[in-house]
Image (cartoon, rainbow, N blue to C red; front, side, top):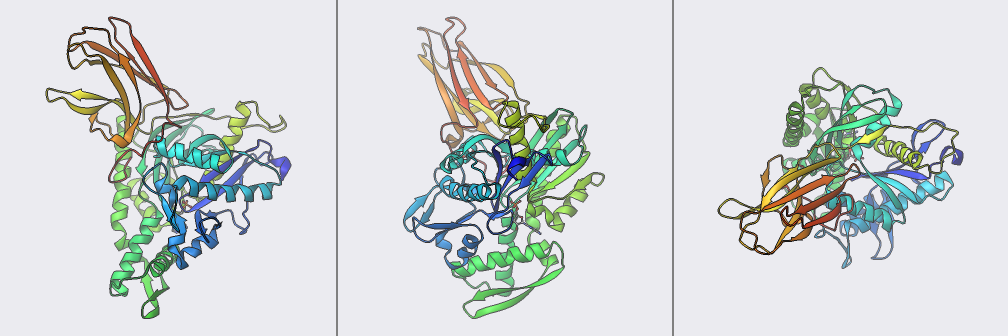
Length: 508
Ligand code: AMP
């Protein structure tokens, strides 16, 4: 096993529901998943705290949620990067990244045992929609778990690396449709001989398998349990039962589930058609994301795909397959490896990183060599006063889906006579509009340009925003008369801790 793993960098899919660790197998020339101590490759991303200092991770923790929901931390991924959301366990607050670190630690420990070697480096995957602060929180979680995070890779892109190794996708335009436990990611990309080009990234940051579980659990309560109030333990049990039924419906039309109520345990018969009906509103959200994707693609002159690749456990639901068949009747939809493709692809990418950095691997085995050409997942703009009423707006300069690297120059004007300085404040957002409202939580960084004396109102200020291929954003300001200039660098993979860009519907 050790000889097959030479590059020393793990690929980790830190999932909403499960975490999977993979390594690049030099002989098979593909990513392979590590088994954990539970004998599977999927480690439930759940932590159960026996008290505020001792804990367990994995299946036991997930089941512990039924007994003590207040001691179990799950679905931390939806909270990553938010400074406001913490898990309170016995009066002690755990940040989402602290919980993520405990899961990562356990997952990597399992991998070390399986591989029989010390490993300290990893590529960790994140949903494509993750903004700068959630990416930074993921890096922090990795570091807290004792890892050097070599890169953060978008989950659908990781899956594409895996699929490309398995079957030749050269020359194809592909849609990766990734519906996991907590998120929907849609990535359109083009695969070439030596490169993968991202074209459009969209999706919904608050839509995943868990929403289908919740909707079905609510439906069962209203229709079978006389809307009775359940204690948190019963709620948790109902949620797990709803998830179990959801999975069964991927193969069968009906099933029976058992739930606890004040009157004792009751058996409930449920059918796939009622599951489909009570989750229709979630399918509508999927359709909205697809329409958003297609509209952006049309603007780029692309109207169809050669292949759709399904990633994420929730794509096994027949309603999702039906929806895709309706939206793309002439496209081949490929499923397979839904649970492991992301981790395996991260391992392929890790190997690629290692070989291009002249890393640990011997020259015995060929290395994959597809360069990733990224696009912006967000729009970036400068806060400025607009119009006569002087209302502050973000003036977008770089729009989501723009190819990286990119540099945009724009002229702004001073707002009063003898203005002393301008504060160049950069914000991220998800809009395609030129002007959007200022949301303080979407602030990324700034720099202050000192101005010469006695400049009249309306004097020119030139601003250039650039984003490098590796995601480093630079803002530069210049006053042309005096030549005074200022520059600030913001690493979009590791910015100052800010909250997630705001969107009430979870769209990105
Ligand atoms: P992932 O984040 O890719 O691990 O996906 C986890 C989500 O997939 C969870 O919401 C699971 O309940 C869901 N899932 C896994 N297997 C199935 C299945 N057979 N049918 C429907 N959903 C599934």
